[in-house]
Length: 238
Ligand SMILES: Nc1ncnc2c1ncn2[C@@H]1O[C@H](COP(=O)(O)OP(=O)(O)OP(=O)(O)O)[C@@H](O)[C@H]1O
Image (cartoon, rainbow, N blue to C red; front, top):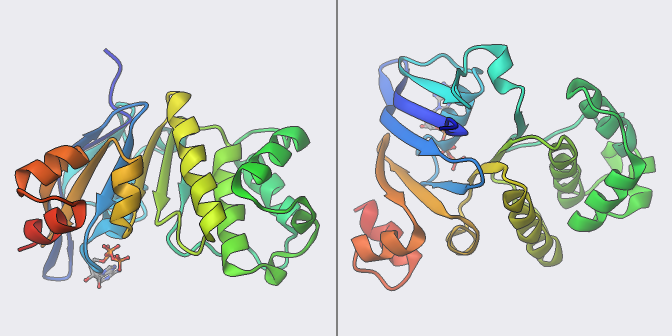
């Protein structure tokens, strides 16, 4: 049996004396879109930083396709979009994509790039401009394009729809479904519960450092006797 795309096993993380993650255990399957939700400061970005080995764990273990996430090789099948994506301002969009693809060990493919830009509604001419001239939404689209062009098996996206206009938002969700069809896994955070409901196969609610719920949106509503995911979320965080 193939290993999960992501496995968190009894993960614990503290900052000084303050526990931010306690006993987090969770699997994400290949071909699954998984959403992590929680109030500001719940620990979502901290969990992602632990997964990427940007921060050391205080307990537990994280595996990426069965490999300990502390090993650099574990992160090879993964593309990551940070919460505040800020590419080097002096590069053109095209230079940035070429640079990232080099890091991923891939050739720059103009046809693939054009398709990906269309899929995110980023005008092709923008690639010739330096990133300093980009709006917030354009910058976010560039970051998403860089991830998608890597054609990885796992996408870790911290608030990927942040700053996207309504059209790009719709196109982004369409693209995520396409990614799922290829068998890749997506682990994303979002504050937009409507997106989570529409897009995610399963979600986890992180609160007070613990997972309060893990399951499908329907299971979440049923668990809390709620009509909407918003109501269920509010009930889950008490
Ligand atoms: N490097 C750090 N040192 C100390 N405390 C930190 C550090 N990084 C995060 N924290 C604290 O850990 C808690 C969780 O932060 P984190 O950024 O993981 O939350 P989040 O769920 O991603 O929040 P948001 O939804 O606002 O992005 C917060 O209380 C934050 O202040």
